[in-house]
Picture 1 (cartoon, rainbow, N blue to C red):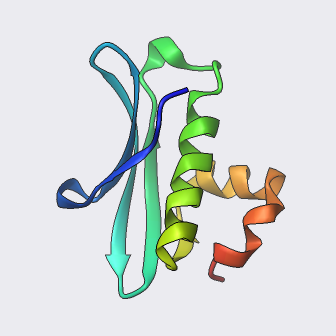
Picture 2: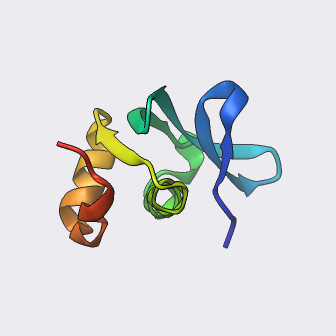
Length: 92
């Protein structure tokens, strides 16, 4: 399984999928809060669990950095509803 990395310069978490394809979760950094604003998965990988793996990796990186997540992205909000074990990092 691909590893999610944080691309600080482009304010996004990214996960390589296949070849050059990448799934991304864009954010704004506000102090110790990471506001997740948009998630993108290439259409050809839709329905294959890519966004779920991206979300889990993103939440794990946020947790590991000691920051909190603010969930403005609808997908990330739905992911959290089904993964309440991340409650310790979700602000608000």
